[in-house]
Length: 136
Image (cartoon, rainbow, N blue to C red; front, side):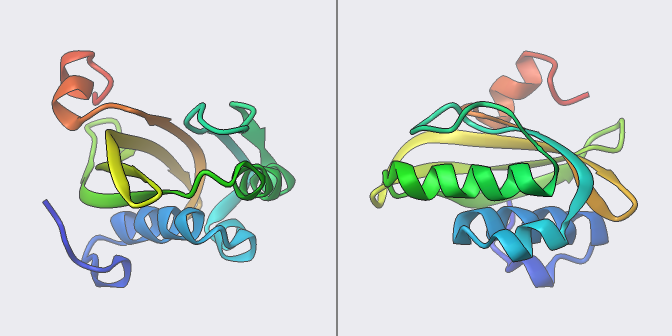
């Protein structure tokens, strides 16, 4: 598992996904969109008041606005990352609400043109994701 900072990731795809995910944690729409493909399609966790599906740069701004409006204080701590056989990047960690760990967390990102073009996240750990055959 990795404890390094996003900019210390040796793999450029891992560095991109870590930077993207950090921008989400920081609720920084400008930074998030700088790492997002214009046609990005995102299915984030269904917690707080997030709608479940957001598209494009405007959708990324709406997603972050929804998170801020929900005010539940959730953050993800990242613990591991790997490239899947199909080229997607999987990021693993834990979800915290108001400083308390409440669940394992997994994110799977698809990249295009050195940007994140698709993302799905799950309240699940790496082993469960493997068992469910979601990490192919």
